[in-house]
Every structure is written in structure tokens, then in C-alpha cells.
Image 1 (cartoon, rainbow, N blue to C red):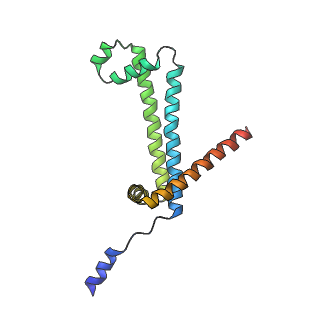
Image 2 (image 1 turned 90 degrees about the horizontal axis):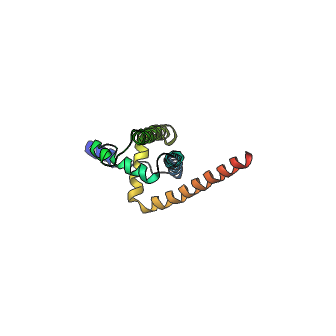
Image 3 (image 1 turned 120 degrees about the horizontal axis):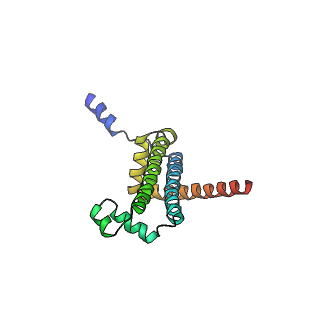
Length: 155
């Protein structure tokens, strides 16, 4: 009887992922995606606003940035190298902010890293859950768009 009782403990399943769990996950992922998009925007603006380097040249220097020989080969100037490094620093700082925000949201908003990881994992293997999540995410994104419209009307 003791053996059957201990087997029963292992057979218990985890609580099902609720719609509220999915909504919190969707809000978190939408926020993180917005922050990622902001990095692209900031970097693009920095590149466009620099009159001394074209986007094509920026890309060329970026590909060579960690290789002294290639930098010499493409005749990268100190100013170009400093500019590319400043963009990399900005990107890295913003990426660190995303990681911090994700960590905080997972712990304080979703409730636990375990639940976050479980949702992430199950979304990859459970088509029904993924479909439900996609609907919730679309609603979250629409609500976010509505809030931005309302904020811009107030200004």
C-alpha cells in the first residue's frame, strides 16, 4: 500500500495552464518584443543621423569590427570604428535592460520561472494551446495599439 501511495504522488500532473497564465505570458512577450523593436529603431536612427558613415559602410565596418586585419583591409577610420563600437555598446545596454525586464516580469507578473518555462515549452508542442495563445496575443497587441492611439489623442 505504501508503494501505491508513493506512485500516486509521482503520477499527479501539474496544474493546467490557464487562460490567465497565457495572457500574462502574452503581455510579457509583447512587452519584450516592443523593447526589441525599439533597439532596432534606436540603432537605425543612430546610423541615419550620422553624416560621416553610410548604412552600407556601417555594415561593412560592423562585419570586420572584431578583426584588426579586416579593419585595415577595408581602411576603417578611427571615427568609423568608434561609431560602430558606440552602437554595439548601446545595443548591449538595451539588451541587458530587456533581460532584466523579462526576469522581473517572469518572477513578479507571471509568478515563477517554472511556469514561464512550462508555457514556453508547451507552446512548442501543444497545437491547441498555441492556437489559444495566438488569439490572446493578438488581443493583447490590439489592446496595446488602442492604448497608444488613446495616448496620442491626449497629447
